[in-house]
Length: 608
Image (tube, rainbow, N blue to C red):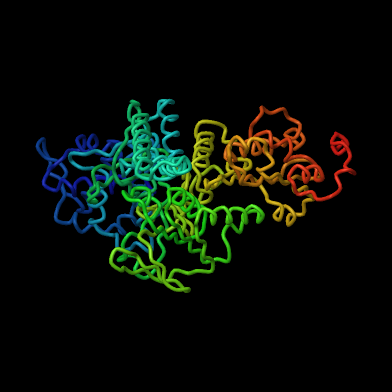
């Protein structure tokens, strides 16, 4: 955008806002942060063409006139930017010779002045921009870094940037979300309830403890940032009005502040995906996961719409509290992406808890019958006192005003990013659930490492070198997985070992008093590296991280097989899990052959 046009727009904004006042050129330069020499040249043009008026003399100054409200922005743009023959009016100059505010205005004007925005060609748009950029009693604040959302990546980056002397704004619309999804409505509250259900605590006691845990961590996270001198925690809704400028609105939609920064991070997380089902807005006792975590009663009959991982965790948790749970899954089966031996065991264990799993079942409508909610399906009606919508999550981008920027979003509303987590506007980054992909807190933490590397380091850490990503489904017992399952490895052409050990054959299970589960590992025969593991059983959420480390560091499976582990532990199961096929079958209890013909164990081990 041409600097002269920029200055003209800036002056018109200011004088239109202060239409009853006069300002000399020095006053204007000071109030608008513009270069005095360049400003005088623009004032001369605006006066000559009757866009503004001037009163000469000591008491005089520049002022809006009756024509200011009729400025044709297209004509102004033509004069300053498009008319190449008018070279004597074209300025060259250092882009740093005027304040950053005027650069922001220029960029915003260039965004709106396009073929599809011809409506914005009158002074009204200038007045709107002035309301955005300056107010008589409020000045736009400049930060080094603005973070929208108080999630894992954002809060960690805020602390790091502040530690390097940067001025940081963290914008969070809800005081209940300090620390992000995980602490307040995700991992921490659900795992607290899961733990207490397994321990046999009452639902009422568990809900009370869950609230205490969440509140403590919420407060700790707030104090962790708010106590730092270089960080402002701002409780507003953030809305982009350009690539650089953000409005801060209160809960009524009133603009309270306008801020800008050299770098911006979108870290707004995700929200529940609410399906379009008849009666969903009028039926009672229908919750998403956040709502269900905050109920003050224990459901007697809980129906869960959806059969994904969130659905299974809630089903297992509430079943442990004594609630009867019914899962309605529209597909042929649950956990179709997992090892089917393990998936079958999970289904059996859930059913043993009293969980009913209905597959090929579509929910058509909801209605009320006294204090019950009726779920209408393609197989008939089901009555419940509580319904959970576990139908996925989607990125929180709908109220950010990204349509006012050049940031591109995907089909699900996710911010499209490159390997450095930059959006299509290079100074705007996205981290966590809002960018799509795997929705885990530890992914958000690694997003922080990637952005930190790009902003403060050499940019070497990217999404392309994260390594294998493990995950745990916190059912009872938990399922943890990293890498490939056997069927996937075969499809990719690997020659594999597919090893397994039942938890009932691990000595520690006697101490844990829990024989449920199966551990499986997939090994590349050619390289002896681990391709993946699926661990269904107690403490698998800890064990899986060791296998992730081995995969990332290209450690042969034989190292885990021959390592010395403490006893009695679940970790020592690796001595058996990574044995060769025959002995692994014997250990797992799956071998039905003649043991008298078995050779000694050491002869089964490959030469290294």
